[in-house]
Amino acid sequence: MARLGYIFSEVFLILNILLSSTAQIFPVPRNEDKNFWHNQAAEEIQIAMATATSYNWGIAKNVVLFVGDGMGITPTVAGRIFKGQKRYGRSGEEEYLSWEKFPHMSLVKVYNTDRQVPDSAATATAFLTGTKGNFYTIGLDSSVSMNQCLKSRDPETWQSSVLEWAQDVGKDTGFVTTTTVTHGTPAALYAHSANREWECDAFLREEGHGCKDIARQLVEDLPGQNIKVIMGGGRLAMGAVPSIQPQHESLCVRKDRRNLANEWISSKEVHGRKVSYVQNQRELLNVDTAHSDYLLGLFADSHMAYEADRNKGIEGEPSLANMTSTAIKILSKNKHNGFFLMVEGGRIDHALHSTQTHKALEEILAFDDAVNTALSMVDLTETLFIVTSDHSHVMTINGYPERGNNILGVADVSTVDQLPYTTLMFTNGPSYDHYWNGTHVTRPNISSMDISNKEYTPIVAVPSLYESHSGDDVATYAQGPMAHLFHTLHEQTYVAHVMGFAACMGPYKFNCTRPEAHLSRLLRR
Image (tube, rainbow, N blue to C red; front, side, top):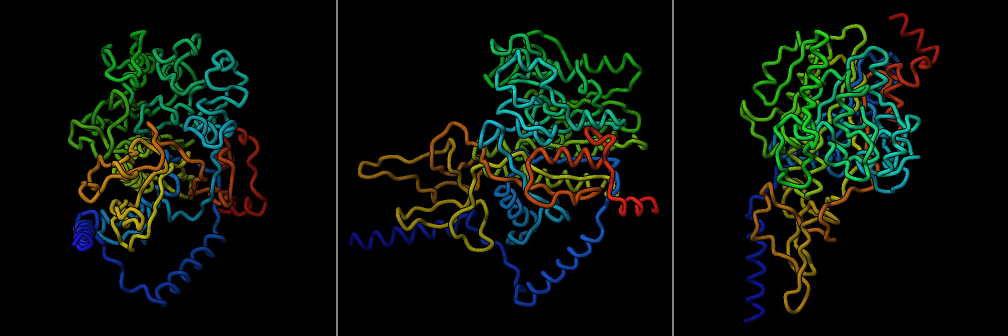
């Protein structure tokens, strides 16, 4: 009887899993026979052959860089499947994200000069300045290590970014992010800091005494002063809210009580420039882009909300796509010299650090929407368009789930402990939940949990307060002038150099000669 009871309990467990919403099997295309795969491959060969004979050797008037923070290859695959399942009700594996159809791509190595597994500040320094730096440092060469404030004040250690290169050749510049505007990735565009956490003066502490915080560098120094479009979160670090006591130690609240947002605005208006300052969706939609010279959008005290949590009403925060659209409308008014724009899906990274897979995939879809929006607004014959990531995460797609299985669902039932486990899991993170039940080590039975909930975090192998990055290579996708330079495995610094060479700026301002045969063809156009 005991054996029979065990069998019934196992059958009940499996039925419970199969009947759950996360066990949904999305329909698989029925025409995938031999002819389907052969015809598909033949079409792709023709596309590849046409691509190889139609490289764009022109000079990029505009450069658009999209950065999916933490969006390595594994999160990208999961996002691709999630897109097909959520938006089209398909199995998802056959889906594509917008950039995955770009004609050129490569892999990029993400290590820091002092770490096998990197952080976002040093990786941003690499792909935005063309020089690798040390862990947790921003815009500095490898002679400066984390917290070396005095050494970081030496201008010889400062690395100029592609944004500064663009301003130097007369391009308008801007950036959009879903993090604070002083966060690790955007800060590498304009700041030089021995610690990425020095976003406001309160976080300088003893180690940063004598150094200028990142928010002040954005407002007071070049190239920050001349950035025409700045959008993201970070009102606290910018002093754009009344002085308050932070509710969490991670919030950077200015001690000097300066309102740097107002100072930034005033510094433009005193020279007769038209400046727009917006704090919600309604205000952003009402911006007169045709007559705005500068735009500052600060939509949250700290980071902007996750897409899954975002108030999509008129008084809420705008989407990444809406911010991107407005940025391009303003920057594209520079008809002669063009523009540089960086757009960061910054909260992909944060959701993965929290092992909140549902939220992370929603962030990737919002990023996909923003890329599609930008693609519809630019001329790719004169715009180098790049989509990349700074690093990946320790998320894995595991088990042997059936084709079309809900990517947020159960992969299988373990043959060892007879408990189900999810397709998406992490090697470390905060949701470690193995425990001693009196006879052996076990883990929770997720069949009774709502694993489709956006707050759900799958079990991890190693306990950690915060899931870590991984050292995996990441992919870079490109189209437009000189996009074919992405063609193999590259150092992450190469990304900045391609942007510089394509647009004849920075180190390539006077040295961007194309091969003679291609140059003569360009002149005949």
